[in-house]
Each structure stands twice: as structure tokens, then as C-alpha cells.
Image (cartoon, rainbow, N blue to C red):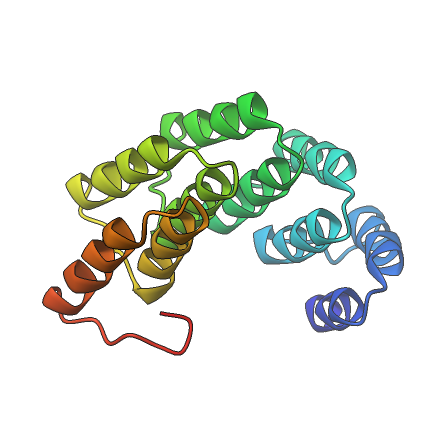
Length: 176
């Protein structure tokens, strides 16, 4: 029940109230789990309160609550949104060191950050690593790469990505 309320508070922009409820849970008999922490961490990152999210992440560790791919992806996304590249890549390495495999969303977040900065070589490298690790890119991943190429004026490369996406059996959407 607490998790549902925390989720509702975060979805309605009441992240501070969700944090307060999380504190009550921590002090009470109904301890929060990874999902509750993830909900609050993601909401803090979306509310541009990344440092608070990082503190909460540290608190998880202190309490013996293990982060998962969602925890790390939310934090990486938040850090990338503030151009905190070193911390984002450090968080990615920590994720790998903890034995947590990145998923398609994690790679898409990193790819998006690179394309927005015009780092297309790095973005393409992320895509290659993703495929090498057995994570199949989805339409969002390819759209992000195409958008990056278009922003750089490389329409031919964007078309090449589009064709690759179709060859891999993915159906373009309105963003494509």
C-alpha cells in the first residue's frame, strides 16, 4: 500500500511528500524495498534533484537494499541531463562491477546523451557495445541515433540507421 501511495505522489509531482513517506517507512515497521526507492530516485532525477537522488542511493546501500538496473538507469539519466559525464560513466561502471547488466533503456539513455552533445562517434560505439553484449536495440534506440545524425546534418547516415532498423525487423514509428 505504501508503494502505491509513493508512486501516486511521485506521478503527481509531490516528490517531497513521497520522500517524507519514505522516511516514515524507514523508521516504521514497513520497510521500503528497491521498487519504492527506485520510484523516489527516478522522481527526484526528473525533478532536477539529482544530488538528493544520489544521497538516497547511498542510503539504500547503508540499509542493505540492493539497487537494480532501474536504479542505475534513473541515476545515469539524471546525471546525463546535467552534463555530469564523469559521474554518469562512473555510475555505469559501478553498475557493471555490481554484476547488473544494462538493458535497452540504459543504453538508450547513454546514446541519447551522446547524440544531444553531438558525440556521434561515441553514440555509435555505445550501439556496437550494446549489440556485442546481446542487447537488441529497439525503435527508440534507432530513433535516437537517427535524430543525432539529423541534428548534425548527416541525413545519409540517418537513412542508413533507418534501413538497418528495418532490416532487423523493427517497424518504424511516427518519430522514425
